[in-house]
Amino acid sequence: MPRRLEIGGLYRDPTGIWRHADTDRPARVWLQFFGSRARLDGRPRRLNVLDPSPFDFEDEDIALGLSREPRWGGQTAGDWAYSVAQHLEQGHVLLEPALQAAITAKKIPRADARRVRLAWHLHDGAEGLGLKDQLGPIKPILGPAWARVVDSVQQVIHVRFGLPGDLPVAWAKLIKTVDRQINASEALQLAGYSEAEIKSRDVLANKETPRTADILDLTPWPPSVAQERWLATLRKLVG
Image 1 (tube, rainbow, N blue to C red):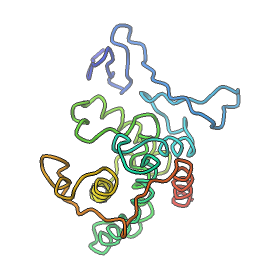
Image 2: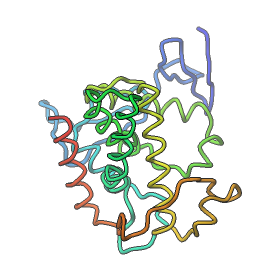
Image 3: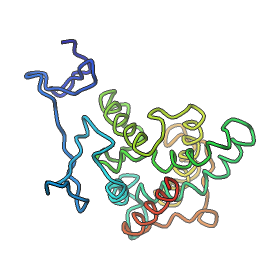
């Protein structure tokens, strides 16, 4: 059987399944959900992050994980960690004008607006399903195997909520721009970087202008608040 991306004793077969190199048995990395709806047989629900299915998790599972996953390695100001859930929720403030500009410029059809908002709201979803918010510069070091695992989980999240597995290029570019805008704002308000450091090639290399607290206040929310708000927005966008 042809083998590829062999790493840590695992390889991906031609169908995309991760297997143990010594036995060829499918590999499993279980994420067991806490407090979620149990299966009818009473057993806890689990997601194999190496072979994910869109039927193996609930909205609440992603919301809980995102609300407890810190950005910036947890090294931020405030009584609470600034969570990925809050990052996604507050990012809508910056997404909306950028989306309207893209629609006006005919880069994105107006009919796609709701799904673009949903794609933004879910674009870090894999970080709520056990795959963590990694510091950006370390991602290339983790390599293609890590990226493939994250991408596969992200794709099944998209499928579950009616989005294309791979987002259209115009959507992805818009989301990336908005992500850099709020990243710059978080760096300034929460993570202790100066605006010069944010833009420096030797530090964050982010050319976006950070928003100050009078424009977008990023004071961290308690996890329960972040979870509730992120989940409420998801249900509005899906419903």
